[in-house]
Length: 618
Image (cartoon, rainbow, N blue to C red; front, top):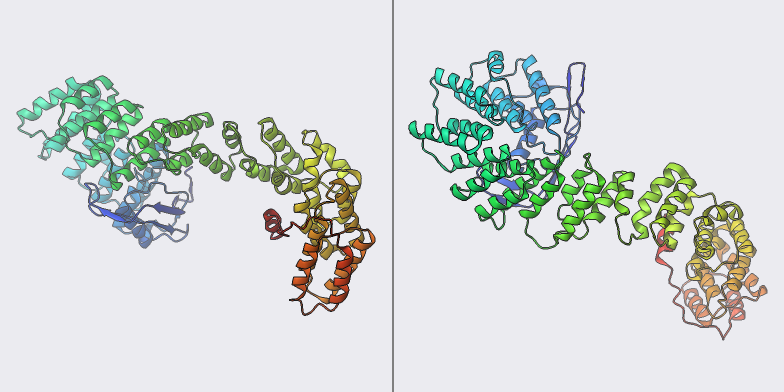
C-alpha cells in the first residue's frame, strides 16, 4: 500500500535479494548480462542518496531483472540529493523490473516519484522519456496532448515515438494518428519504428485486415519490412486475443528470434491464457532450451502473471521453457509468490498436482505447505494438508506450535483433533514435544480425561507425559501418574530422564518407587531397565556429593530388591577406572555386585534415544 506523509515520498526497497549463477551472456537487451550466485543490498529508510541508487542501478545492469526481489518500504527522505542517473534508475524500478507487484501498485509508485521530481523541478528530457517507457511497461496509457502541454522542456523525436508506442499498445488508432501528425509537423522521421507502432495499434483493433492496410502504406512509403514488423503483427493478434488469426500468421510470417518481442509475445499470450499458442510460437522458433538470460526473463514474466491472478498459465509457461529432469525445486519460486496474492488455495493445489503430473517436481505441495506454515497462513496450510494422501505427523508440528502459542492447551488439543479426523497417526514425539508442553499436566487425573476424549489410547499417553514431568523435575506428579495409571512405558526412553531426575531432585526414594512401578507394570523382568538408569546416573556424577548420592541410590535399589545385569556392572567399572575423584569406589562396587542378577539379559548398549539427547539441549 502506498502512502505519503508530510510531503515525503514513502517507499520501498528494504531488501533486494538476487539469485543466479555465474556466467556472462550477450543478449539484445543487455549486452553484458551477468549472473551471480547471491548477494543483497540493504537500504535504511533515512539514508538514501545517489550512491544508494547507483548501487541499485549496478544491480539492474549486471543482474538483469529484480525478479524474486522483495521490494517493500523505503522512505526516500533526501530525494533532492539524487543525481540524474539515479533519478532515471529510480523510475526504471517502477516498471517491469518490479515483477512481484501489481500493475496498480507500479503505476501509483511511478506517478508518485515522477510527481515528486516535477515539484522539485528535476525533470529533464531524459526523465520524461524514461517515465513514458515505464508507463508503457505498466500498460498505462498517457494522454499525449496533455502530457506534451505540461512538459517543461521541448520534446525530442524520441519523446514523440515513445508516446506513439505508448498509445499504440492499447490499440488506440485515433490518438496514434494525432501523435503521427505531430511527428510530421516537426519533420521527424517516419521510420520502421513508427510504422511498427501504427501497425500494432491497427492489428489490435482490426486484426490481419488492419495490419494489411498499414503494410501497404509502408510499401508505398518505401519503408522496408523486417522480422520486427512481423513480430508486431503477432503481438497485436495476441493482444487482440484472436487465436485463429494468430495461428495462421505464425505459420506464414518469417521470424528471426528477438528477445524483447519474444518475451512480449509470450506475455500477451499468457494474458489470454493460451498455452496452445505459446507452444506454437515455441515450435516456430524451434526453441529446445532457452539460454539462462532468456530463461531469467521467462521467470520474471511468470511472476508478473501470478501477480495478475494468472498463476495457472504462469506455471504452464515455465514448464514449457524448462525441459530439465525432475527437480525438487522446480516452480518453487512461483508457488511462494502465489502465497503473496489472493489466488485461492484450491487453485494452488491444482497447480501443484499439474507440476507433479508433468514430472517436474514431486514435492510441490509439500513445499507450498511448508511456506504457508512459515508465513503463518494457517487456513491455507490446513487446506493444503487436507489434500495429502497420507499426511505425516511432522507436517503438523508448526500448526501445533502456532496453536499452542496462541491458545495454549485448548489450541493444541483442537489441532490434534483435526489431525486425528484426517487419519493422521499420532506419534510419541508429536505428543511429547509439540502437544503436552502447552498443556496443564500438573494433575494427571484431571488432564488425561481432557485429552482422552480424542480417543488417543492411554498407553500412548503415559510415556510422553511421564517424560515431560521428569524433564520438568516434577517427580511427585510423575509418581502420582505411575500410582494412578498402570500403563505401558517405553523403558528405553525413560531411563535417562529418570537418571537426570536423580541428579537434580535428590528425591531418590520416590524415583526408585517410580522405577519399581514401571518395572512391574511393563513386565520388564527379563531386561536391564534398572541397569540403564544406574549407568546413566553414574555417568552424571562429577563431584564428591554426586558419588555420595549415587551410593545412596544403589542402597535404595538394593532394599527394594531391584536388580541389574553383569553388563551394566562392567560398564560402570570401566567408567570407574577413569574417575580419579571418586572417593567411594569400593563401596560402589560392593553394592553393584549385590544388585547383579545373573538371569537377566545382558544385551544392552546403554545408548540414549536421540530425541532425549536433543531435548536435553533445549
